[in-house]
Image 1: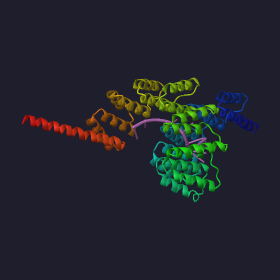
Image 2: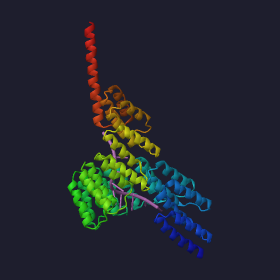
Image 3: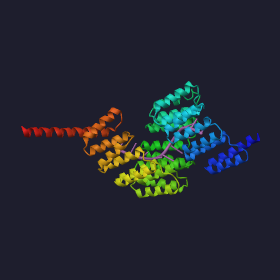
Image 4: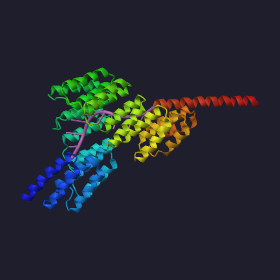
Length: 452
DNA sequence: CTAGGGTTAG
């Protein structure tokens, strides 16, 4: 009894150290506890695993799971849910699936949380059909869906472009005994904005107010992004100052919303003004904020400032990511320095980020633009995974280089494999090929004429 | 231990 109580107290202390990111202290406390005879329990380990997931990633967290098993404590459904959620957050799809299977093999019965995470995982991976299958499985196993389940599905449907189904499910929530909450409204508003239905989003916003919900900072930034996307920059700016005026916490999220919106419009001055505000307000600057600032510098052609930020990131002990380097590579290509872009891509590879399809797409585009056709084709043929951006860039590039025969063959391969290619690329290839054929025909006619 | 806002390419 006393031992149980003490372990519980120990767990509370460990939890607060974990929240403060002080994992060394947390582990030292576990060791102290063991010395005093208070053995860590499942809660201790789950707390530690959650902290490892948050700060060090799923691999590090998994090593705690091994230690836990060595100590004779069996992982439970919460242990696996924690790991699964972490893997999904990091977009490690196959890792998520492996963990789910491992959980089943360990005879741990998945609960609603597990299923919610799996649904989220499949939607995030763009695998809607697999998500539906998991939902089916959840129902057939009589696991009651929660509001989080419906929120996850509505979000997934929105992201998959299925706004109609998302709205239908949303309207059914009361009947399903899961009345929507603010988070549900935020999901729906974002989904509506992202598919261009800003007026509907504003209707939902109004409905939210009528029902007595108060929009939070997330609601605001979501609507602001929607305004900019629909060409209503003024309204976006207005809402931002309203947000400030009403005392909402203006954090890096809010500032980055404005910075990236103005960057997209090519309005450098405004983007820089919000950057100054962000840096001046003392909010912590995370990697996404750095990437946002770098992007605005790159869009303005100021690569010197962008690289200065890269040094700042690395000196400050933060880790640059795929976005960071892709932004730089694209920036270098846009100012015409493809050699530097290639060098930076090699640097990116040394950082273990070389598999980035977006970075490769940018580089291919830049190489074609700079007339380095053979290098572009080499990079293209080396790519293991290609997408519709890859093919569109390559088709445009081949047309620019007047290699219409290759382009036609590639285009027909795309059509056969169901790869979506921008209409502009399809038209360029066909127009070029027709023109080329006409030229060829007239040359043949001319040659025939000369010989007869 | 899940679900929502800000970062990249045609």
